[in-house]
Image 1 (spheres, rainbow, N blue to C red):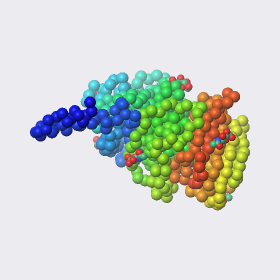
Image 2 (cartoon, rainbow, N blue to C red; image 1 turned 45 degrees about the horizontal axis):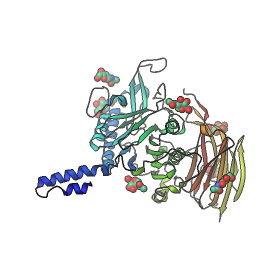
Image 3 (cartoon, rainbow, N blue to C red; image 1 turned 90 degrees about the vertical axis):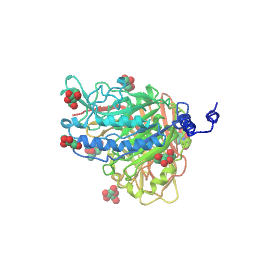
Image 4 (cartoon, helix red, strand yellow; image 1 turned 135 degrees about the vertical axis):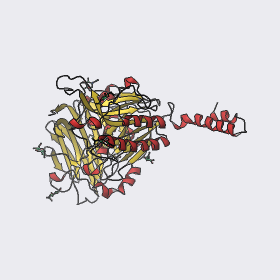
Length: 517
Ligand SMILES: *[C@@H]1O[C@H](CO)[C@@H](O)[C@H](O)[C@H]1NC(C)=O
Ligand SMILES: *[C@@H]1O[C@H](CO)[C@@H](O)[C@H](O)[C@H]1NC(C)=O
Ligand SMILES: *[C@@H]1O[C@H](CO)[C@@H](O)[C@H](O)[C@H]1NC(C)=O
Ligand SMILES: *[C@@H]1O[C@H](CO)[C@@H](O)[C@H](O)[C@H]1NC(C)=O
Ligand SMILES: *[C@@H]1O[C@H](CO)[C@@H](O)[C@H](O)[C@H]1NC(C)=O
Ligand SMILES: *[C@@H]1O[C@H](CO)[C@@H](O)[C@H](O)[C@H]1NC(C)=O
Ligand SMILES: *[C@@H]1O[C@H](CO)[C@@H](O)[C@H](O)[C@H]1NC(C)=O
């Protein structure tokens, strides 16, 4: 029986009946607007967010920023979002005091095993007013809420660990629609965050939802490591993620949206990303990514300082079939629709301060108008097939680069990378590479093939970028296993201008070494 025949059966007449009818309509409408378990999509909201308050007082900073969050929670709920994600450090801001003064900036976060609803109970002490406010907002607005917050964990001293009886963690907290804490994840891969501690064993965290989707979660720098992200995709088959970040964009391979897209594509997983915004430090970029189906929504601009992105996300997202040719023209929403918006803001992109990768050790050759060449760094070789048509834009140069070795992330993390790519440079000098300006040079063919002997241990990401700091959308990505190794080819599908980066940026986890002071 449909809802329409049911409501027609209510007799006409009094206001009371009408009121009843409206309630009935409302109740019966509910499963449709809230996606429900049976729909083939859910609705996701992510917030590009600048803290509205930064200061020297933890209590005030957390209060003001969480009050801002509540407004976004209300807006997202009005637009029928099932889940909303806020960024790393969004509540505290990046400007936290040293470890010794963290107490008023941090909260106890009850374990999901407690089934605790901060909004309605007080059986656990030291849970901050901020968590309570967010729990109530999730409950009132009937929406899943994902936040990142500074956590204090009272603990027993054990050697160097927990020497002063407390550990501080960089933590994601997830509330369900009743305001209950259903997930708590403590960041594994800290990026020069000296005030925070890691757990003894890394935590690998998932949570289930009433719309039938299981999410994994991780934070910022974690995206470049195996643990916990690839434990979730490759060992547990998780294909939906909520990701909080305060990313420092780096040219030419690791700007924010480029990296988010690259990971989602490589692992073929839906990735809901909320980014902390402070362009002057290079923090910008959020989006909703659909694995090999492309981008649903994304933003990376110097302004506005805040943006709420809402998109439907298809639930069905099989984990990556790692041997098939997959074409990105399955993209549900063509990327151009965003590029148009962003291009109006092109001049503002220069206001995003970018870091630059140190490419000194890379092998490189200047690109010729037409070039078919194998370029090697020691044993790691890549095939380049390049053709351009029409005039070459004299304002830009391009180079083919190859590298296989370690690099430094931040101050003390050494990590293995294997890269082959075409990158943009300002002039003939290699030092000028990593520029990202518009370019009228048209590439008609650009096909780069890398061969990895140990493919199951690496993460090979398509690193593709145009001058608006958006991924280039038209390429094929082909994985071909042969003779115990795997060749991956990345090839342009149509003539392309404004190219900044096009290649494969792979992480090789076997060379990783951390030497935290
Ligand atoms: C922070 O501000 C509150 C008032 O909002 C005040 O009660 C508290 O003492 C301040 N804390 C510090 C450390 O200054
Ligand atoms: C935690 O809560 C207990 C009980 O309410 C209180 O005595 C203690 O001072 C609190 N500790 C901190 C560090 O806030
Ligand atoms: C995560 O993956 C790493 C690397 O394969 C493995 O050593 C570790 O045991 C995994 N952790 C869990 C909890 O599965
Ligand atoms: C992206 O998010 C904005 C803000 O919610 C929304 O208006 C727009 O329709 C979204 N775009 C797509 C393609 O979903
Ligand atoms: C860049 O890398 C080269 C070679 O790996 C190294 O000698 C140099 O010190 C690095 N430069 C900076 C600024 O880190
Ligand atoms: C190349 O560009 C860089 C700026 O990126 C500049 O410092 C350098 O002088 C230029 N070199 C030449 C040869 O024009
Ligand atoms: C790219 O190059 C590889 C290796 O030469 C080749 O097998 C593949 O077919 C090429 N792809 C395209 C789309 O041309």
